[in-house]
Length: 444
Image 1 (cartoon, rainbow, N blue to C red):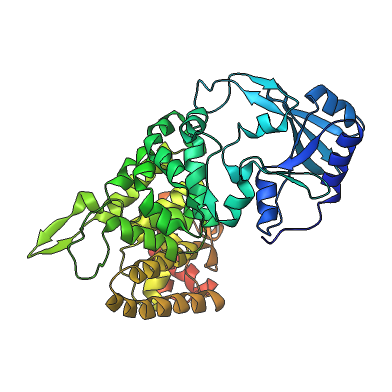
Image 2: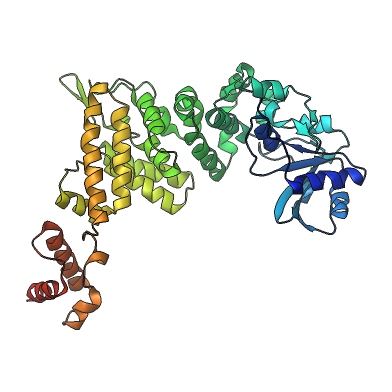
């Protein structure tokens, strides 16, 4: 166990103030788990025997925000650091599989920890570094185990999002889910249909960005398929091609692992072959997936809209998926045309996905990566030399065309596109006089 030593001054101050006022107070949850793992927590949660009005009185000289007063939580700002302070509580039934209908405040820390999700998140610590561990959380952290506090079916029934949280922790921390908890994950998976899409998409991104995402995607596809049925269709789907050593799901999981830990890239990797089960044709025993990139882009768009992703993330992922099968030759003209149409950022993302794709195939496909890296370097050279490949890099613009007689509208746009295409192909120099002359000829 490699613990973090000192608490931030603001946290220590809050715990001390509560104790001096006659109340119990501990940090609890993810911040304690992270400290036990030697990771500096990003934020701190405090649990206390003080009721919300008493907490507000203790911190009356500080800014106090009643963030969740109904459930016993207030946020105290000390030197700009927000600290969520929650009263020990016992939860009533969860009618919506997400939040308790009512809570009852208690003076007993043990009763409070019984309502928490996993043992590793139910360890409390005071300002002196003394731990209160009623459920074996420290042992589970040391053994890299995710275990529900008490009955896992009850925990997941209270808050179905905990099902995805268990999988997320397994992916991010590299921990295994203990067998009885794992069984309940599969048994209760249909409860995820009661959870908002925004919360599901948030957990999905964290799962995909975890260090064990590849293993988790394969191991828990039945659960993920509850909220994204299209993913389940990839399971055990034989690709019928000598270039592939995995089925579609396993291949996808390895591609996810091979791209950078970036939400857009991980999402694009997850969905890049989503349309393969719908596009398989077999010719002389060999599988082909004609049009799967285009259909995959459309399916990605539909899935990400359903999951309420923001427009920028969705549109970028869709574009990458749609283009991942495009052939790009290592010529300046071809690369400039691609960047002109899609942007240099999209080019580099598509190349990254292509390289990850090749690494998840038969080893003989690795030789294709060299060519992709050459294309990538050519593109970087074009950018470094500030060569023209976009309308904004032309030495003239719409105002210049208006000055020589063009009117705003279709003709002006067509002329700019023609000039850019001529510059990219090398037929025209990106010089103002040459472009003006060409524009005048185009108008005639």
